[in-house]
Length: 198
Ligand SMILES: [Zn+2]
Image (cartoon, rainbow, N blue to C red; front, side, top):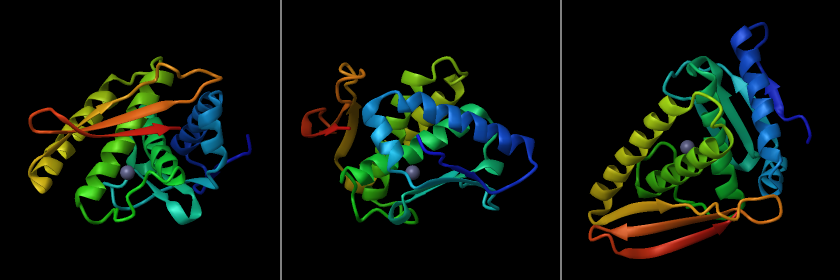
């Protein structure tokens, strides 16, 4: 595994700690071959400071670059989650499961769907690989956030609700990671199903 993380701030204990933990995070994920392939296709991961406190991380598709804004993140568990969220965007973009009408500045349905997808996959990865961390608080915040985005999506599209179902049953060293999304209507009927083999 090549060295990915680039620390753009020097002499800060917190940033150094985040850097170490994210290196460890990458090592943990790299054990799964399918995830390792996606990790290898990331060009760089930058740790920076940013003045807008609402921004914790971003993914820049053309450069395959993940940026983590360490000064806005208050716990290691959150830092790991932010990385997993941006990594999830990378996975969806790279595997062509990404709505190109997505724009991070416009909260339209494409935005909400992509953010729900990224949060949901990141949550799965967090639960699967980082259950030995204090993840309860982050899981609660993100689960509430997903519910909130689902509500917004429902308002925008007037009838759609989404329900996410993940199948990690075949998640092992030799098999693929399956990720299934069921989109459902208000009567809880499945309208469409998207299967991703990561
Ligand atoms: Zn995002």
